Image 1 (spheres, rainbow, N blue to C red):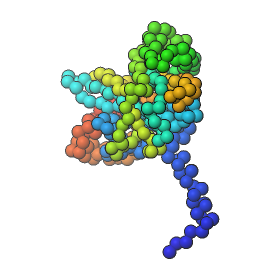
Image 2 (image 1 turned 180 degrees about the vertical axis):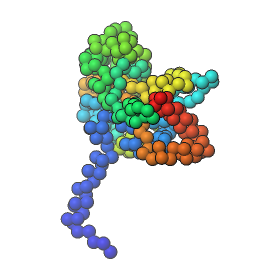
Image 3 (image 1 turned 45 degrees about the horizontal axis):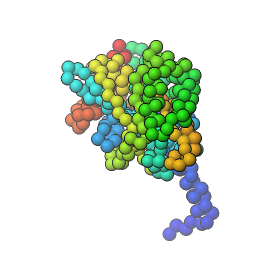
Length: 323
């Protein structure tokens, strides 16, 4: 029988907080993907099913600069690709809010703005060796909003959102924010939705309209795993069968503006705050993929129609970029 002394027990207990932190996203990990949240793989390809949606990958980021009462809030993006008639592809992007167990989404008041058109700039990514030349691995590229959005734009949007919300009655804050974004220009934001396109197309959702998701699958794309997920909104875009279209839609960067309304009654925070978070699906190849590629692709065709389709799409993308 193993005896544990009081000193040994104290040492073991001291390790528990460190273990808890290892389950969290480190501050240096600005944007993480399936590898970091341990999504299951089908052969060499990432797969993440949440509720009834199966994604080719996910992107997860902590919301920066939130009030202390909201520490640990995250945003998650997943992209599903489906084939349509005449070579068309449908890209369904789903956005989730991740919350620690101590935060109930019903207690959140405010809005989420999803800017559906990607900014002109792109994240830097690792260099992957192609067949004849080196190419940037767009799939694995990651970063933060200041890498792709002018700081002046971030400051202008967040400041304008805070001042507008503070001057608006709680019942119509998101409608007022949507009007403000549609009717006005914002310094530094000329390329937020693409070169010269201003804010581009965007969707505004109230925290009161988001719905929690039941953890019923083998993929729960959040850290720590005890956190909850709530579906914020979905956006559908159409593309074609080219590699360019695949990259532009499946791995595009999505800036997100969050506004948390503060009041002294029902809100978790006592004053309004606003933040910008940039999301993107992050996928990284399995190191054994090149060696076992033919074998794995063959097994995919017989096991999973969804993953087989993803295998064909992603293989076609890399083949096109290596030419």
